[in-house]
Image (cartoon, rainbow, N blue to C red; front, side, top):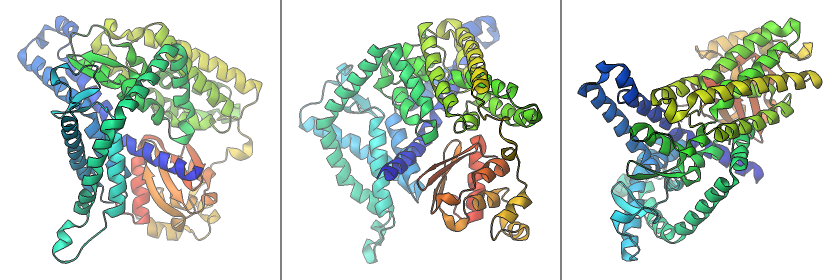
Length: 533
């Protein structure tokens, strides 16, 4: 049962990436649009003071803010797409139709029940306007719930076909027919029960806010501690997109969630300082600074004969973390061999966010340095206090370096470059092919078809017959295997460039970083899977 629940949570967390990864793109483009309307930049560069550039900036940032006010729809479509086992495009389209049915059904029921509030006084009432329809303010939860329901019904009935005159009602059309009464009943049900959820969510948010820096510390620490499970984004997503991360009125609109709020504030020239809620998205401080110090400590404590190999591994990992905010390559290098370091890393990550909050730093820092520059520099120091973010980051760079170096030496931890001689050997492809039964260089060359290391990856996972499903998230290849004990972890790490391997029952995650999409395509091609599946 526990394994089944974990499998479901991992699959759901992977589906969350479909909508979540679009939002930073919108945020960056809002920041770019803000460049063309930034009063200080216009003052420094008078050539920018013209209707063409300022108009372009206003249109760009203003149009993208609409994404933030329709997150329910985006999450509904994205999660249905991510959870659908097949016919993903049809699942997404059905989710769009279902979303429209749900909001209008709820609106009609509220009218019949005489609980609809006057539209000109909705603030603080628990009701809001969604696509021009007044309903209960369910925030992003409406999208999550409808996305999951749509995907479940789609996976059950998408293959149902009929004969004769009824054949046009098969497939995705039958899914929509089944969904309509379900969505209408859900709309009625949530009209009664959602106000209780709203009360609970508000109380939880109040408790976290009342906990102050302690609550923020727990948030930052847990967000890192859950990295091995792949469920860490389930910690921060509610704070970024729901009232748990704050509620602010920006430009006459009531917004909830840290990311929704600061994206809107970026586009609003009347906002002089970003709201305190931005602290929930300051998770990048350990990515840009802390883990770089950890890498330097591991390099300096590596055995002299292994320093060259350690440098070759640590420099790309540190660069990826600093620039793009992808931390798994570093974290998986010490997570399992020295768990105490990972716990300390999690504690320091939470502590760094507390320090930023104490100094009232309002800089936006969810990922790496590129995002940091694009978000903060155009906004100016007064609006974000971004130089203080860098100063705090440098302090934690030193803390990470000093603590990691001291503990590695004190306890003789087996970090990169300190492994026993038998563990640092890199396997060649020919050695591996000789080791795996039934795989020869000739047979691999004949079947590989130009798929890079897909043959090695598949063989290290126990062969084609051992692989049930293949998926991927932002940095990890996620698989379901018949027999996980057949996984050759050393080969995946040494021969295919994997940063780590996590096994939970029949679920196996192999961390490849930002190039995981190419790895997934190669594996799919080698297995003969259809690209969309």
